[in-house]
Length: 234
Image 1 (spheres, helix red, strand yellow):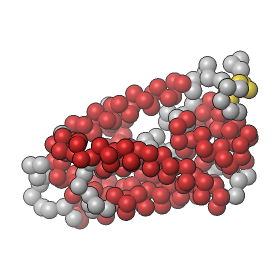
Image 2 (cartoon, rainbow, N blue to C red; image 1 turned 90 degrees about the vertical axis):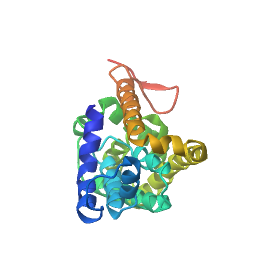
Image 3 (cartoon, one colour; image 1 turned 180 degrees about the vertical axis):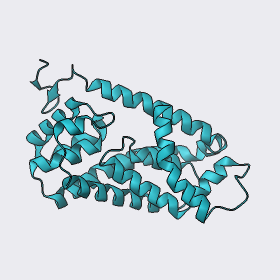
């Protein structure tokens, strides 16, 4: 419930703006899925995606893919437009992160961040330079750890942004392809039960989030590359 509550609080200002400026008057429609679909068709959802991605590069703990992939099952033709706002938010957050000086202990105190995540990211950067970003998509280490530690390695910000966007888009391409392939067979089922399934998806995401955090607990051994331990537990 903790993660679900925070997600609702994050979305609330953008939804309220949509209701105030654009939504039809007269209360919620009987079909809640249709109402959510109309929200994702609005300009307010563009800025929700933008600030979601920007915040994820700085402090937010829910990846943008979680939000965007939920949109795949909606009858929205402007999915690519939302993706552009996501990339824009990622770039904006990355730039801000380069000018925000946060200590390693400060990063480790962010929600759902472990000290070993910071140490592991620094190890990847030390071994692979800017290409240490290649470990991010499937390592479980949040993107903000990579952005907030990057300044200590004196990377050229333009190249860092280019590599970061390419790496993150590769993960999008995989998941987007899978969900798009499932759309014809699952659309009607998901559409009719959308709100319920969103809460289930959030619950599953919460479980994986906690599992990743525990993986990088005190017993984790930091590796320069897979199979070589360079930091033993004290």
